[in-house]
Amino acid sequence: MADTIVKLRLNQQQLELMDRTIAQGVAADRVALVRLALREYAAARNADAGTEAAR
Amino acid sequence: MTSRQIISEFVMEPGTGKAIELLKGQILRIEQVEGGQCADFNCFNLHDYKEFMHCGRTRTVHGFHPTTGTFMWSAPPRERAMLYILEDTVGRNDVLFPRCSAYVYEASYGFAVHTNCHDIQAEAQREYGLTPDDVHDSFNLFMCTGVDEDGHAFMTRQTTKRGDHVDLLALMDVLAVPNVCGADVMKTSNFALKPLKLTVFAATDADLARVPKTPRLASQRTPKDFKNPAIKSDRPLRRDPAYKAEFSNTPIVVTELPISLAPDELAMFNAVKRTDIYGDDDAAALRDLLFSWWEERFLQAHAGAPSIESK
Image 1 (cartoon, chains in turn green, purple):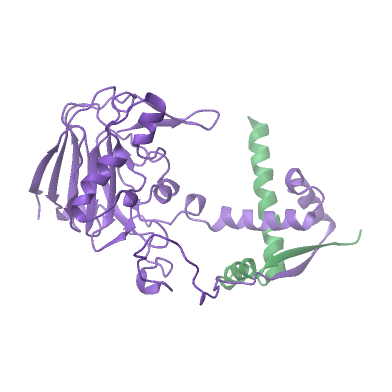
Image 2 (tube, chains in turn green, purple):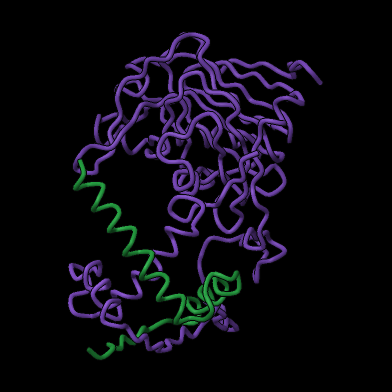
């Protein structure tokens, strides 16, 4: 299955925050930062869902 | 200094308030004489009255009921910690309600004249040349309030006793203006007006050591940073023909950043994206995800409030 392109629309302030985060060594570039955010955000929700289901 | 030295004492009678010069490193104790009395409070930078304690900012940082270990903050663009709540024997204060006013008592109760916190504050600070327009929303000490399920603020009776007190440590020179809340036909002070005692102490080294550090940031601006530092001295508003707008970071320019999602990433995204808000706008949903993640991972303080370094 082919990749899906999502075109993020970001203003200069949002890009600045991303770039400062990247400069801290969190990710290699903007695209990598978005991928990291997706993985960690989804993982956190899965963990929450797991905790809820275990109750 | 190892023990607090008393600098001055004063009793505020019902219906009154008192403006007090409280210097950096001094403590103002506001104390119940009989119990059950609300005190309204505000303060100004003693050297620049345009900087004043801002309930909105304080509420954002510390919630609806600030108590021991929290600060009273000045309004933007200053946003400095003015006072630190060193001690609070009750732990029930309010920054939801504005000061009560003459209008409230006329509109709701039919009084032509009635003690009210706005007018008491105004009269007390008149000693320093301030006007009724210079009264700001009050930090309401000992006032028992909450928010109901419909989002309305409510007030109820308090349980304070004689000797209960709040100690406010000045982090800058301020004009502190406490007053005995004028509400005797509301639950605020249990339907009676009682005196409150004020004591000013010199803080001890131990008192000063209890204050957490607060950040000093470039965004905490003072008149030297203002494009127009002069205080307007007349009342009508007239357009400045020389005005040229200088809004920061404008124009806001939007750039596209294409993100290629592999099938497993797309599945991950589809599982968590907020379609309830963004519908089929995946770009908006991914942007939301990005900055929501950022807040969760990097934001130090609740709701973007100024961070406070703990010692």
